[in-house]
Image: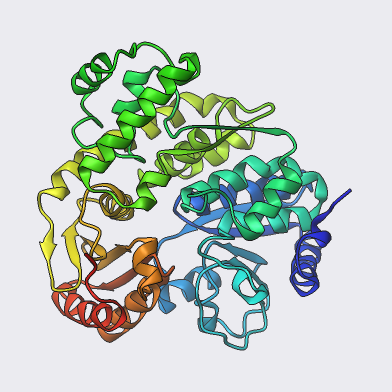
Length: 447
């Protein structure tokens, strides 16, 4: 039987086993996860792994990744702390802290620390496409006990939330799918969620169909025009109907001027899991949607076994969908231009990333990266998005956010294709000027 040690480098495996031994020697562990869909999926994996070993735990979420905020969170309790989907670039602020285990995949500067900093990038794994936070959490769960292989669906959910399933799984993610996905069933299909077709397209935000998403009356006319009954589910369509729907939705996206990256996401390998009521995309979106409206704890609670919160979890997801659709349409009319980037102001901090990601893929022109600001009472949160084509031409938003953030007294980082920052309120224009100049040095404006 293939096991974890057979699919990753020995040094990678040894680091994970060292972390697992440290965790198993504890009666009480703290988990700090990034607050997004990937981070929350990671939290579900780790809390289940701890619960099964009888280890008590406290779960918290990280939003601010600047040095002072990170240090304060770590110093709250002198207990072993697992930081997941963040932390590699922040441990420099707590170099003396021994009771810390970081599981990350983002770009970071190497520093000498007493704790464990386990980052996929140190083991020849691309942390943008081949390993996400949930990948790292799943690896640690397997290092703790191979019986945790049944937590596989939440690894998949995290990878989807981090957009690492576009064009199929790659690298380490693919190895995990091939090794531990024996209780999942893959079918190639249109990337829509459950319910009848009218609801599926109306609530579809990824893909986002301009003038169909959020507008059921238009969806009904669209389906009627191509002779497909809107009260059917995807699974109830015949082969010809499925092909006709896919072609017409593709044409709809092409009319919006989307790039090849978005077109690839119209169809995907969707997984169903034995014993799980949600498909892979539904699971990912429910977890992510709850997090975006500030209720990360609800899906964690549900997937730890509390069935009483199911209705609340589904309701939160629909609230998020409704908000996102409204914000995307509104923001698309209020984009501002700089020479090498576009920007907007988001109404809610947790929504900036979702808005920028949706706009960048489906509605905004594909020639400049997009930055979203949420100006709060204290700091301003920044979220940025590009495309894989931009990255191939030199864009690295992790460096943009980090360098521009530092110049204005803040901090930032993340992926080359998607990154964030926290900056002092009132420094937005200065930040934009610096970010615009950095982007100009990285990439030319694309056609």
